[in-house]
Image (cartoon, rainbow, N blue to C red; front, side, top):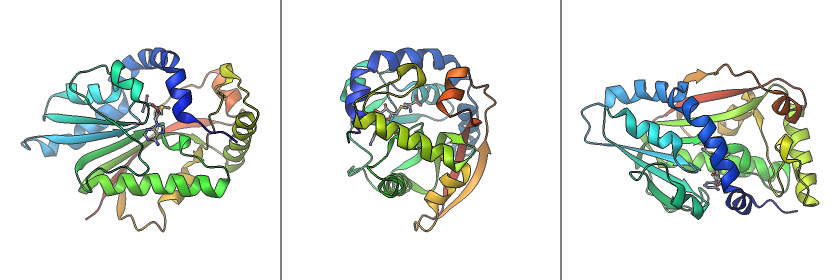
Length: 247
Ligand SMILES: C[S@@+](CC[C@H](N)C(=O)[O-])C[C@H]1O[C@@H](n2cnc3c(N)ncnc32)[C@H](O)[C@@H]1O
């Protein structure tokens, strides 16, 4: 089996940049940027805020956050694909070419850690290895947040568990035989595991992460045919979870 996400994103960088460009206007006005503005407001007066995006690609979200301008933001992009360094949308973004797994970043350094549409890519060869790797990624993200700081997870959510499993096994099968159905978002060598909302919270349970959920946002997006087909005609919907990492 071959889940080679690094290779996939490196090879398909132009497709991804095109998608990002289309999403850029959305991101600018996105509920996430607006919400984070509110959480940044009480921190006004601080000399700077350190914001880390895990898997930030070309940095469209980080740019929006830097542009908010209320408090000086130092934006960091922890990105496994080195090529994105050349496509960063803003020179102020600091690029770290590394994986969330085995990173050597300083514990408690960041005021905000954000992972947008990254979690479903942290998969393993079995369901239990997948859950372990997603849990490990969340532990790492929580470790990097300053006590009292914010962790943001944005993901496409499934309505039913079976859709999560079917999609995972389908993507595994396609990866096994090197197949892809690009139009339906099934890409060569990329395995995915999307969760239900309950599944996301399950990943945080019994993890020794002290957190409280402070906001849940469900942007209203009407999924097109391709997305609905990809998610097996289950209703899927984007969810943004904002957690405070407690001291
Ligand atoms: C679906 S894209 C999301 C990009 C961006 N966050 C957004 O919302 O547009 C996932 C990104 O995560 C990166 N990535 C995948 N695995 C990673 C890892 N282990 N550590 C850091 N980044 C990773 C990929 O290279 C890719 O840029």
